[in-house]
Length: 315
Image 1 (cartoon, rainbow, N blue to C red):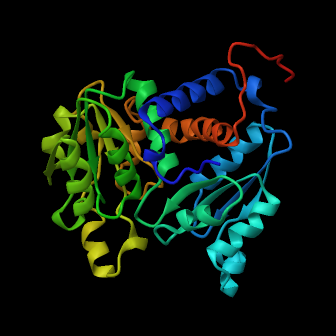
Image 2 (cartoon, rainbow, N blue to C red):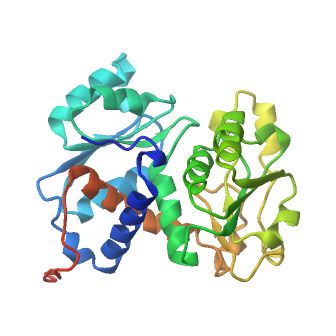
Image 3 (cartoon, rainbow, N blue to C red):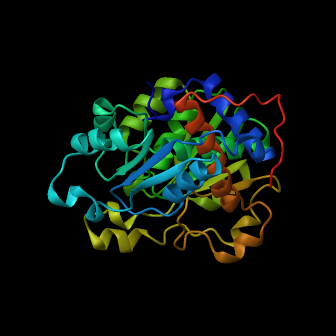
């Protein structure tokens, strides 16, 4: 049985296969609409979520399966003190696959050790968010046509941003990817990402504080919000939250071909008037997340739909 704890759980070739499967699902959804008939997905979310939880549920429903679960720790037996290990043992009797989000780093990994069904890490603290990374890779591939030889700027909260950590870990495996890490000193990437991932892999990267200076060289700009829930000090959050705001004026500094991504939710780090720019792709990114999660569910459940055989459209 296989789980998904990190983007590194999949080889580059396997990620390419997932992206290809997601593209086929997007192009011909009717082919897959009964693939998971009789299967159940449990969404165990100990932390608030809109896109991740709903996109997982949408993914399973589009595959013809069913969903069950909880949307906060307060609405589960965790409020009574039940451990993650005990919860997943019970969930294993109710569902065929589980997507878990937890504020504690490593909690989904602990669950996977005791689970009798595949567990997908849907975000654990500031550590990893592998399915967001798969959505990011799928979006980049579909929009610029490759996952190698491009320059990506990651801007904002690089210290606590699990989406950033996961994406860097995945992209260093592709050749010719250059990273521009844009953040104030207080929110720079953790040393384990810098030393153990970037330096060890030999990736080209630089750490800068100016978004304006970085813009002209970027093929992809990945914006992130400063996450209030990760701060211990309210004053630090208030001081840093508006450090980077992408505006229509700043977009004039970028290439015509550059794309803007954001894992969402957005607070105010991207001005609303940027939404009309054809390079703003964060809502497309959210849409494509459903298809890559459909591909992941099928893969972990070992369900194969022959892409060469067209299915009747019963709609």
